[in-house]
Amino acid sequence: MSTHDYIVDNQNGANFRSDLNNALAAIVSNNSSATAPTTTYAFMLWADTANDILKQRNGADSAWISILTLSTGAPLAGMSDIVDDTTPQLGGDLDFQTYKATSFTSTGIDDNATSTAITITSDGRGLSQFTAKAWGKFNGTGTPAYADSHNCSSLTDVGTGRYTINFTNSMANTNYSKVVDCRDTNHSSTLVVAHSSDAYGTGSFQVLLQHIGASSGAADEQDVHFIVFGD
Image (cartoon, rainbow, N blue to C red; front, side, top):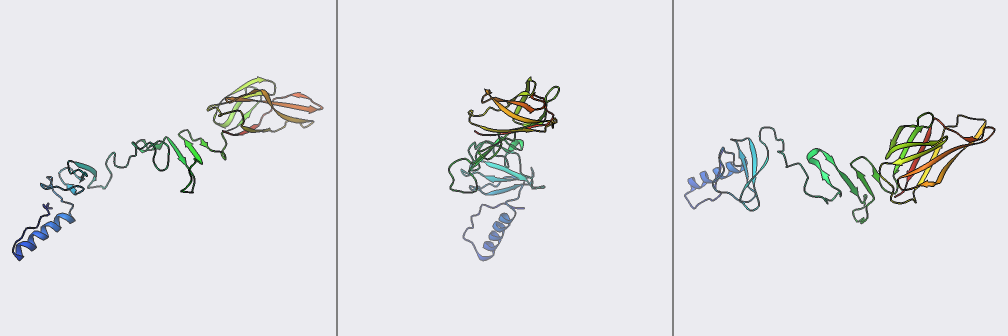
């Protein structure tokens, strides 16, 4: 347990060896002491035994920075949190202080890529040209209800066999692509799934289930599935 000014004066052999040993003891113990070293240098370490904290001098040699708890090695608050850099290398707004990433963007595995390949938002949506913007499965009979869905805020029963799927986060434009299918419970006729063009917008789209054949006409079905890709 020692500190040193790290200045070895001219002196006789025995005193020089003692002074040098004291300097080395201070180095290997990280200047371990209950009081701060009298002589300080930029970036030097100090094991503050009085407070059980490992500290480091800042670059200007004007203050101590608390790094970790000596007895446990656990980083102190603020040392493992990334809160100030809103445009880090990974992209997005990172907030590790609350142990979550509010968003994440990546240009992919190519370090020279310049455009964003994928963005992962805080609600779990993956925004890219190869991930679904929305998907869902619902029961269209009785009061229509989702069994499960992603980026879908609600489901509107417009009429027999007709439903409006409403997005939580709207599409950028109406050039998106969607696929809809369902389980046909009436095997005596052919089921046609149509998308209504007059109810097709960035915030929602409409589906029409229609039977053609022995039992023709619009019909509610139990298992309806859809998936949406686009901007």
